[in-house]
Image 1 (tube, one colour):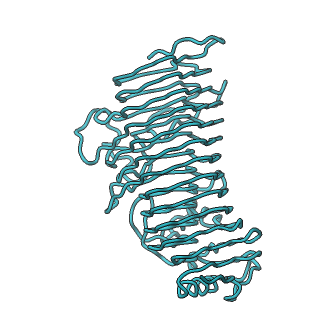
Image 2: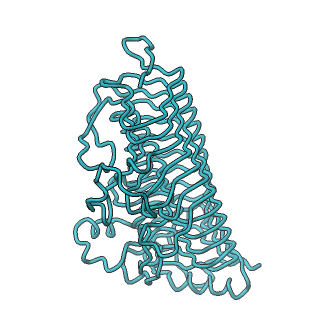
Image 3: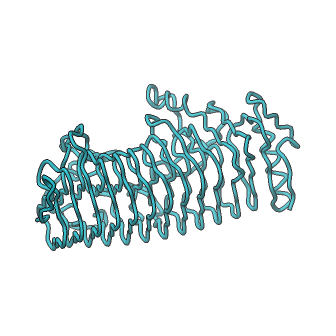
Length: 440
């Protein structure tokens, strides 16, 4: 297979010359050869959106930067998903559709130049004809690897594979400002067989969010067989998040050997009536959290997005079960230390007709921050900011606390409402230097 430099097609790495055409010509050449390697050498290459082809290795060398335009005219419109809904969007900065065998690597930087996009989103959304570009997006693709890169200033979500299979994201660093809107780190949506490893993620929204479409998604597919390991996650609304787009089901997910620091929530499940689907067979293990707002959140009353204010979402009575009823079951948390937690050790709130089911906490230590500032546990209507709370459990069926210790709570360490099958074994609350039994 051929190996070429983007400079062979007229690219200039001076940071100001627009190189969109040079990238298009280089990729077209490689596609005509049946595949190959495209090298981006040292320099700063200013460009519009880049569309990839099959059997391509894109090598952004150490010392090289892809700097993307912030002019919407440099982004063709493609039909994809935005927050689970199929619609026209601006093409991602780097994009693949229905392709296979692609590697993006090299040790260089991809800079989405997102400041103008964020400003427009915050201050004048009417000037955004279509949703903002993702930094890297793959739709309906096979065998994709993204590795050894520094990604920054994404206009919206940073890495978004959708309806794709065999996706590897390894050894990348993502840095977006803490206040940048919707700049999630890695969001696999309706994908299968995804491996995310050895990543550093510091962003303005969820660090990793696993998604599977909404009730508005026409062809609902599951997101399944996901491994997340050896990652550091900083800031953001949640470290690892499942939902709220989960209508196609999320299942068979393992998260292990990770560090969460200063995220609003550590573990976060979010859904609501109307979504349908199930989140099931999820394992979190060997996690350390520090300075998170709440360590464990499972929220069936998530209000953000379209229809979030529908009265059915907020009805606390049991409603008939139908295809729009969400479910969460078979969830395991083990070998987790969470220190300097501010609001809740855990907040698990199901709906009465579909309780959160079969949950286990094993070998867990949660230490609340002394004199913490109150904070919002999650996007949950009419729940006031809190500090120093323990585990709050409502509408749960079968939950096990085994070898769980909670420190420094200023209210009931374990509050249970409208729940069945609560089992507490060898678990304690630490008060005045003494370990007292944790009791439901």
